[in-house]
Image 1 (cartoon, rainbow, N blue to C red):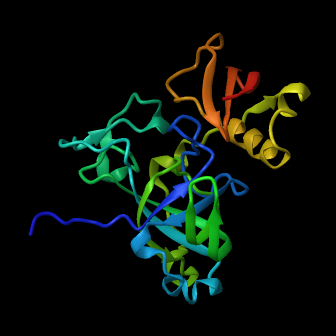
Image 2 (cartoon, rainbow, N blue to C red):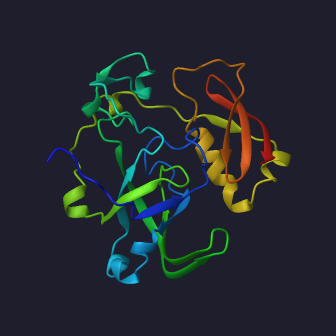
Length: 234
C-alpha cells in the first residue's frame, strides 16, 4: 500500500479568506476565534460526546492551497528569511510530500445544534481560538489534546527557537479602527503586531494588504513600527 484516501470531516470558518495575514503557528493569537463546521456525513452530535471535558484540540488539516504532484527534500523556511535551505521534515513548510498540517487550538464553545443562516449550515460546530487556518480549510481529523502526553516541558525547538520575531508597534487611526466591529479590533492589532509580511521583504515604502473579517487592511512597516494606511469594507 503506497497511498491512502482521506475523508474531509469538516471545514473551518475564519476571518482570513486568503493566506496572507494568517498567524504562522497556532496558539500565537489566543483571541482569534474560528468555527469548525462538519460535513453532512459527520454532523452527528454523538461524535462530540465527551469533548466537553477537554480544553484544547489537535486539528489535522490539508494545505489545500499547496497541493502538488511533486516535492522537494529541502525548503526555505520563512523564519530564516527564505535564504537558507533545510530539510522539509525539519520544518513546518506547507510544501510537503503530503500537504498535511496540524494545529493546537483552544475550545471556546461546543454547539451541538447550531444554525448558520449565512451558509445554510445546520448541525454541531466547535468554536475555537488560536487557529492558523484560512477560511474554508478542509479538516481531516480532530483529536483531544492530552496535557500529560502532549506537553513536553524540556523539548527543544531547533532553529525556530533561535530565530524569534520581534513584535511590531502598531499605529491605527481611530477613524479606521472604528470601521471594524468592536470584537475584531484587538484581534486585528494582534495580527499586525506579529508582522504578517514575508520575512524576506523589508521595503519601508511598500504598501502591503490583506483581507480580514470582510475588510481590506493596507499597511506599511518601517523598522519596528507598522502603520495602517487604510481599512476598507470589501
